[in-house]
Image (cartoon, rainbow, N blue to C red; front, side):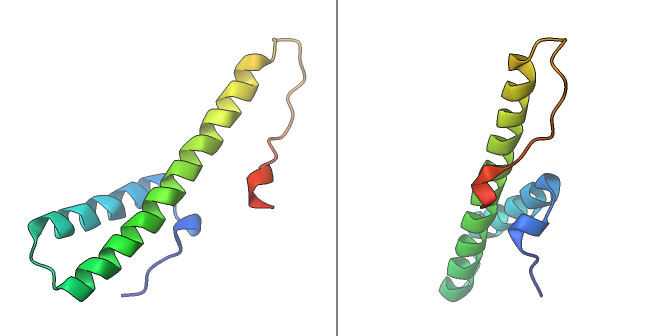
Amino acid sequence: MAFRRPENMTFEDTLKELDVIVNALESGELPLDSALKQFERGISLARQGQKTLTDAEQRVEILLAQDDNTPLESFVDTLDD
């Protein structure tokens, strides 16, 4: 099974896959090698999900900090540089 890169996934797809991984790990039925690979994938997904949430929070903070007369500006994500 080819995995998509977490940064190319929607937040919702990231959560769905992470949920599947957590359930598989919690079952205790995976061989150690598979469990480690799934754990590594889960960490990547969790980090990307956290980044997505942080970016969204920053956007909300920017919007709330502006008054109604301030012109809208495009959000530039400086963390990807």
